[in-house]
Amino acid sequence: MRDVAVHAGVSVGTVSNVLNRPDSVSPATRERVLNAITTLGFVRNESARQLRAGHSRTIGLVVLDIANPFFTDVARGVEEVANAQGLSVVLCNSDGRPAKEAAHLDALTEQRVRGVVLTPTADISPQVQALRQRGVPVVLLDRRAPGADQCAVAVDDVLGGRLAAGHLLDQGHRRIAFIGGTTGLPQLQERYQGVAAAVREGTGSDEALAVVTPDTLTVAGGREAAARILRLPAGQRPTAAVCANDLLAMGVLQEMVRQQVRVPDDFAIVGYDDIDYAAAAAVPLTSVRKPREELGRRAAELLLDEAAAEGHQHQQPVFEPVLVARESSTARHLSRSVAS
Image (cartoon, rainbow, N blue to C red):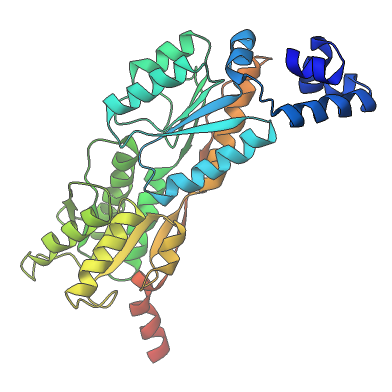
């Protein structure tokens, strides 16, 4: 900054004003300083600036699986709000591993981020409370908060599970699989609860629902789950599945097509999240739509409001999902309508 000041013939304070409060400097002086900055290739020391301010111009976003397009869309919503406030987003991927999540939170603490938007692993890390005790707000994303003293943005996944299973029951299915497991992430537990309740009410039996737990919640996990289902005796085999996310649903679809199982005539599939790839699949996937970008935007808005610390009140909005019916579950029904 001293070099810029000498080159422009102004004080260091004037250079600082041009960088931080440009409206306080006359246009002619501002132009002279900016020309000097360009000529010298000056780049401000943002780290030093953050140390003086006590926090950075960044927020952290820690997600479970960046390979899942759901989180890509969520990140877009967070970034939209942050960028509008002149802030940047540091994106971290926990891979659903508590140790990796904790390491990311420690690193974000060291960087003095303004706040963190977090999709937690199964258990909420002690680092979350440590961050909040230091005055760094943490907003939970796609997860309900454990108490009323924290902001969180979630979706009614019990309702989502009910919508998915209810749709398959309406199509005439009486043996349904839930692919994704019943333990671990609370979101998956809620989806299972909704599916189980709908199947029980629709069939009068708990035996009508099978649970398949693949090793991962990925396309490969979906292929694995489909292979397991196809190994069951015909009389015990489900005729449809609700998948815990769209990646699983795409894997199930791939394996069914590979094994020459007709979708949906022989096996119907419903995914969850309604990522863009769901509609673009070889057989467009029925899916439970979550407002992905809106979740990110709302979480970022709550985070920045709390970081401002001016009369902030904790909020925990819960969005309602919507079922989007496509060919992976409805062609059977549509063909009947055409025939009639």
